[in-house]
Length: 383
Image 1 (cartoon, rainbow, N blue to C red):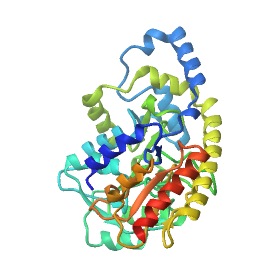
Image 2 (image 1 turned 180 degrees about the vertical axis):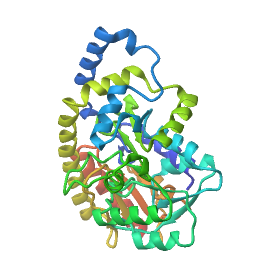
Image 3 (image 1 turned 135 degrees about the vertical axis):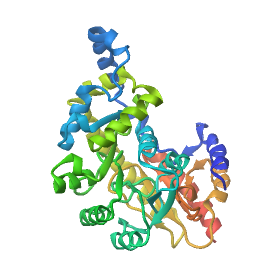
């Protein structure tokens, strides 16, 4: 089934009677609506004309300073973007030449493939297991493949929910540094850990080793979309200065700058509201992930494998036998439940018997009944 056909079917999921596990959407009932309204009112009352005016391409200085301080870098190593998706597009524009090899996880985030493909990227998949990229396989691949970049989501990956362990992070950095490969680290889910030990980002580890942001071979994408609200469209790239300088020029050509008012609202929320919001999301998402995990264990056919994420927004299912989850999607939608087939997340079209489920936006009752209906559809197909 093609991506366009899937999109047409998933339009049906907007109907209220369909239980959708398809979209990677934060829970709207958890948006800090009153806090955003209050911050907006204060800003417009005190600095309204500034908030509605053009601003600098790099982004709000105060917001960049706050982001940089969290990572132990200066504001001049931070570029504000209109969502992480724009960050991926801008990085592809400034880092890649047509024909450059970009290593990606198997599977990987579909939006990254879509962002880099127009710039002529050639995708090569890296072997992964339940703990993410296998460093030994990466080293073997780089021994005979000249790659420009490695794109990875090491924490609570989309679509699998997997997290790369600490030692694998160190090994990945060593291998890529040795071969001169730029690591593009996507970290939109980093703050959404609801179980286990908090791990340093690849950027953190690389900075600790280099002790100079200019020597780091990692560029990191972060976002407020998953922890505050995606409609604010505030995200960032942190990188060596020579990369930031090129991003500034690319962004200036794309949209001049991200919305001034939205950046000011986010800055007003990061110190007080954001920590409370993150704790609330961790609690709710951890609970919903547990409800979905138990329901999947009860209702999926024998032989199915399910990821057990420690954070983020997604579960990943691998079915036994010769099953095509894209072809099964209409039957699931007919039973008023939806998911995303796994095949589009593979750079070269594998993964026909996989699917992605999001647990963030459904109630406990919806998760239980939706998974039960889905289980019947999948069991009938597996036989």
